[in-house]
Image (tube, rainbow, N blue to C red; front, side, top):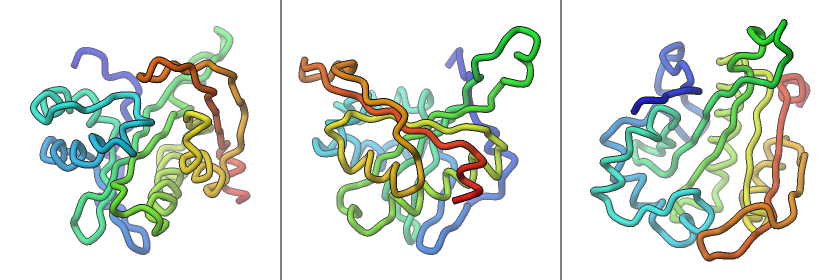
Length: 193
């Protein structure tokens, strides 16, 4: 794990963070098997950037993802995960120091056994609170395949705005080029919402 750029400072928070029905906490190596369990399902892996094929390999490389991941738990059972990686904003040289780690890309995955109950929406809203109120970020983005309607609908439910619909810009592992969507939310939009 040589390059850990963009790792959030999870240490500034008290864990777990709780919502009405869920708790969130940073991922640990013990979470690798649970995450593999739902991420290796076709209906989940179809839209993920990485296709988990065997548990041993997933566990070996888990440390590359885990610094950016929060686990979604319900009654102490892992039901999904969240992703947050901070980024620098583009800036001119004279103000570049003020643009460090002010943006983040976020993402999520939920075990389909728990889909349809609003858990992903509840967890992502808490992730946005962590991003804006806890980490003091200025802007958050999320990307998805345009065909992944549940994902972009979730982005809209939490107040994110569609910024781009890119035509055939995303190569899927099935060999086809798909349209991609980019959503974003600014801190002031979050606070006004």
